[in-house]
Figure 1 (tube, one colour):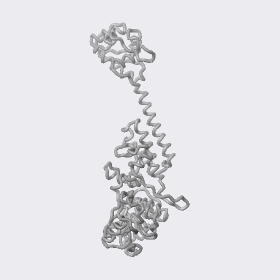
Figure 2: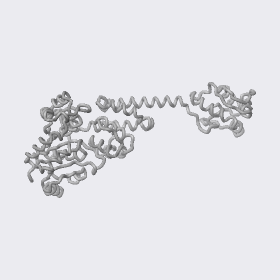
Figure 3: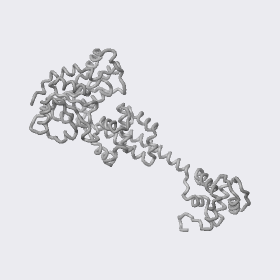
Length: 442
C-alpha cells in the first residue's frame, strides 16, 4: 500500500468478510459510524444466521450463537486491525458497502455554518448597498425564509444567486431617477434585461427566466411595489417594467395621442399622418431607437402625461387638441425612453396619476425625472374628495410614499386615508387638454 492510499482488502479476506450472512452487520455499522463522526464506539445489533455467527465469532475470537446479536464497535475495530485485514472498521465498512463513509454530523454542522454565513453575508451586503433600512426588506427576507426558495436551491447555489440578486436590486434602487434641489441632475437610466444581467451577474443570461437570481429580484420588486407574485410571463414582464427594465424592445409600449414631431424625418412624417388621421399610437422601444435623432416636439410644447388609459381614450374620442402620453400604470422602458427624450428636447411635460400610494410612487419617479405635477397637489386631492360620492370612496392601501413636489399632499392623504383614482378627475383633465393650444400643427 502506497503512502496516503486507502487500504485494500486481499481477496481471501474480502471473501470472508463480504459473505451475505454479515451484510446486516456492515449495514448497521455504517449507519452508526456515520452518526458517530466515524468513531468506532458504541454498539450495533444485527440478526445473524449460523454462518454469520460463525464468521463473526471467528473474527472476534469467541463463540457466538445465531440470532440477534449486540456487537461492540470498538471490539470489532480492534479485531479487524489485528486480523489479516490489517485495517480498521471504517475502511472495511467503506470497501464492503461500496462507497466512502460520510461524517454526517460534521457535514450537517458544516452546512448549518454555511447557511449562517450566507445570512450574515446578506446582512452585510444589505448594509453596504444601503438597502438594509428599506421599508420592504423585512417582508422580502421573511418571504425568502418562509417559502424555502433558498433551501431548495441548496447551499451550493443559494449564496451566489443571493449575492447577485442584491447587486441587481442595489443597481436598480441606486440608479439616478430623480433630480432634486441641491443634487446633481442626471438622466433616467433604463436597462435592457441582458444588459442589466451582464452588469450585475457577469452573465448576460444571469437574469433569464427560471434563474434563481431572477426569481429573487422579482420577488423583491413584487414586495417593494406591493404587487401580487405570479410566475407567469406577463407578470414577470410587468414586474421588470416596474423598475424600468425592458425584457425586450417590442412588448412594452407607451401610448401617445397627437404627438406630431416636426421635421423631415420619415418617422416624424408618419407620426404627423397618424395625428391627422386621429389615431392613437403605441410606441415601442424599438421604434423610438430606430429614430434616435428625430425631434419629438418644438421646445416649450406642453405634453400631458397620464397614468390611466381611460384618460387617453377619452381624449381621442373627443378629438382634443392637447398632446397626451399614457404610461398605463408604471411606464414601460419605452415610456421612460420617450419621457427622457421629451424632457431633453425641451418639452414641458406635466404629469397626473392616481391619488393612491402606488400612484404617488409612480408620480414621484416621473416628476423626479423632470416632469411637473399636473393637478397633483394637496389642494387638488382635497377638491377631488369633495367631488366624489361616498360610495366611490376607497381606503388607501400599501406603504405611504413621499411627495417631494408638495410634501403637504402626502400628509393630507395619510390624514384622510382615502384614494382618488385618475378617472374620477376625468372632466378636469379633459378640460385642460381641450384648452391646450400649444400642440398646433408644426
